[in-house]
Amino acid sequence: MDGKTILVTGSPGFIGAHLVIRLLGELSGATVISLDSMNDYYDPALKEYRLKEIEKAAAAGRSEHIFVRADITDKEVLDGVFASYRPQIVVNLAAQAGVRYSVENPRTYIESNILGFFNVLEESRLYGGVEHLIYASSASVYGHNGKVPFETEDKTDTPLSVYAATKKTDELLAYSYASLYGLQCTGLRFFTVYGPLGRPDMFYYKAAESLCRMEKIKLFNYGDMRRDYTYIDDVVECIIRLMRKGQVEKRDLKKDGPSAPPYAIYNIGKGHPEDLAVFVEILKDELFKAELLPKAYDLDELVELAPMQAGDMKETYADSSAFEEDYGFRPKTSFRDGIHSFVNWYKDHRKNKSL
Image (tube, rainbow, N blue to C red; front, top):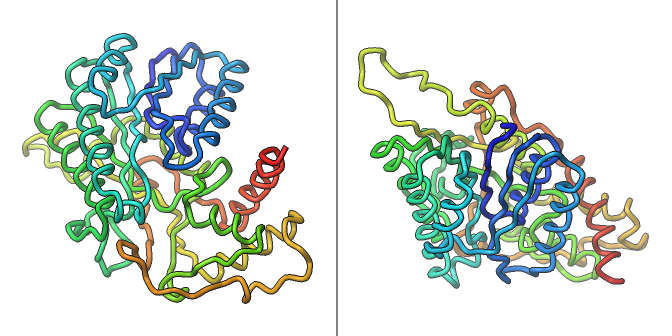
């Protein structure tokens, strides 16, 4: 990928920032473009902080970084970006995130996740030269699927939220563009990504904030939930391996049959879901080790059991064997190690915010 022009939408968002920082640290002679609207879905100061970390990586690296403040729903601006920079690899991570927020604000998801992604697809088609479009999907597309672990071949036609429905729509649009125009499209169904520089709307982050303030945290479905937490560094490793190698030829394609469209979809998860109660205990232990919690601490007093929220899934559980077979890697960071890294970052970030 040295020397290539790479567009990462949704940077300096959580995954996007980590991806761009690593690209700038490893590539030579490349141009890496971050594009984000810097909206206020959560505190924009965190995105500004991530952007500064990206700029530090650019200053220390051997590639150029360009930041474009723009929304992918703005076709004219996006058209100018593609016309000016002619990206060869596009990683679309820009989206309105959050399952629960989509219950209250569905229009935002339709505009950003469907119209915005359509704009990225169109620009990638019209300007040519895009060798590979990689985009973020979500484990939420599995919806009411009662079979675990989730496999990419499983049915995904029972979404439980508007967010999940928009991500499924993105997969269908990408398949159409791969079939009609030969645009190489690969979707990644991320499973509960967490880690340093994370999103404050995610449960692990909100729980850390609440516990440090001695405020109650809610365990939905009365604590009977499991999540396949996937550490951010593992997610970035998956994306970079995909960027470097490109798509793997379909293994089931018959030699004398019609050509399959250049389309692929993968689960990106560790394949080991954590019980919510175990998660809380690990988080409490790590916060205590970091001296963010007092010694006299009764966790039971700060836990509130609550019914399931609309749009939520009881369990997520990834079968990532297809990605491992094609790209030789599976997310592997243990949950305790990942939470330890997050808490260490959170401690420093919390201290700096209070200055």
